[in-house]
Image 1 (cartoon, rainbow, N blue to C red):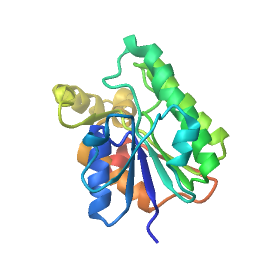
Image 2: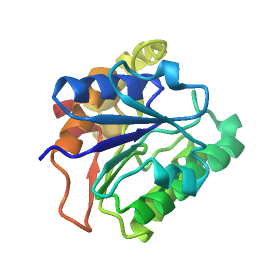
Image 3: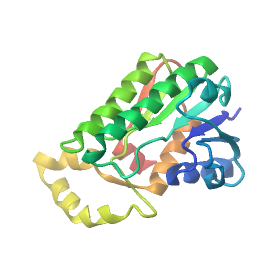
Image 4: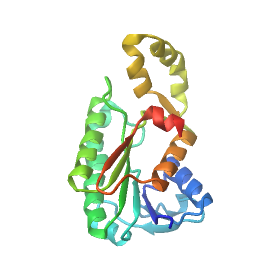
Amino acid sequence: MSPSIAIIGASGYLGRALSTALLARGHAVRAIVRHGSAARAAAGVEVHEVDVFDAAQLSAALRAGDTLVHLIGTPNPNPRKAAEFERVDLASVHVATVAAARAGVAHFLYVSVAQPAPVMQVYVETRRSAEAAIVAAGLTATFVRPWYVLGPRHRWPYLLLPFYALASLLPATRGTARRLGLVTLAQMTRALVAAVERPPEPESTRVIDVPEIRAS
């Protein structure tokens, strides 16, 4: 039986792409979005507008046995947004873990970030803390760890490809270049679909990093 899938943050560019891909594969998708964002969800999903920072409202939009995909995050993260990482990224995960446990969610799929990293350390630490909160809640979980997802209006890192190519050739930087490599929206979508359709063993945690995202 196909899992029932709820996506928090389904109105974003990754959420819409994932919703469309899952629908095309015959899955039922519930888009959980903030009030006023329903029109931005993909066509064909069941939309629930809730306060995603209210555990009771969020829990009411979930069902026992759900696969819950968490995509909420600060747009265009940079070091100046440290307060938003705590207020939005981390706080939303704390609420979602409470709601997921209360509703009996079967699989918590969290889009985290590649780690360790020599830059964006506050952002990386926030995502690491979010992963720890999910594990502490005892939830079966998958952590997908891209560094940067290339897609609509997210293409400027293509300028860095020559530097990535050079770093991949040097033994001292090869591992970092692979771990922090760029992935496309299509690759991320395929990796998330695969993670939804092939969940980890109950009460276990799985990590999908950049090389595996690219191979999806």
